[in-house]
Structure formats: structure tokens, C-alpha cells
Length: 166
Image (tube, rainbow, N blue to C red; front, side):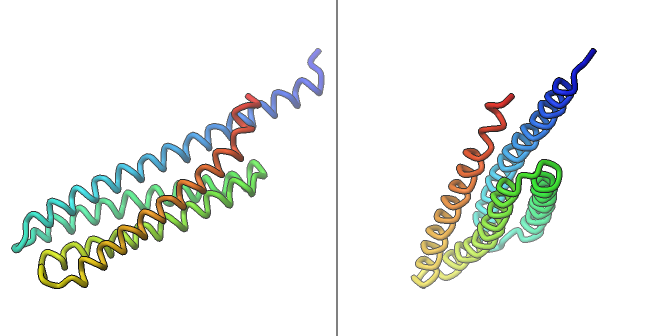
């Protein structure tokens, strides 16, 4: 005969296993974001190399594809955030994910601004304002990346109990 304690233990283990899978999914989605940024950067570099007759059509297609990738990743991350809170009663993890999302939105906006500043630098080589703007934006992006990494570190710390209980 199976005891009630054994059944509860089995349910807890299954729940922890599911929660651990969500944690792994979040890390996988963050890796996808990193790869998307790398593709975005490479595409922008190619676009800038086509100066002064920029290949805007190809670059616009890249922006469209990258936007779709970021939207898909963002939607999946939001689903994970909701599941952490609603299914697993882990509002702490959900809040970390929300903070990552906010910083990622900020990073994407800054990245777009930086791309414009880099193009302006090429188009107006004597104007130091664009160089200063690009430098400032790079610093802000780096600070945003640091903030994302700090939140992910907090997330990792708070989620480690899941891995240790399996």
C-alpha cells in the first residue's frame, strides 16, 4: 500500500522537476537573445559597410527578422514569468524575470539608438557629437548588460534551492 506521504513526496518531486525545467528554459531563451543580438550587430556592421549607398532593403529585412525573434522570445519569457508565479507560487522568481524583461527592453532601445549614432558618425565624419553620443550609448548598454547579469545572478541564487532539492 502506498502511503499519503509518499504520494505527496512524488508530487513535490514532479513539481520541482517542472520548476527546474522552467529555470532551464529561461536560461535557454536568454542565450537565444544573446545570439539574436550578435546577428543584429553583424547585420548592422554589414549595412554600414555598404555606405554611402546603404543596402536598406536587406537591413530592413534583418530588422524584421530580429524583431520577430525578440517578440517570440519575449512572449515565451512572459509565459515563464506567469508560470513561476501562478503554477509554482514563486513570485520572487517571477519578479526577477520581470526585471530582466524591463532591462532587455531598455537594451534593445539603446541598441537601436547606437546603430543610428554609428550611421550618423559615418555620414558626418567631422561631427564629434555623434562620436560622443555613440560612446555614451555604449556605456549605457554596458551598464544595462551589467544590470541584466545582476538580476540573472539573483534569479540563479533564488532558484538554486530547486536544483539542490532534486
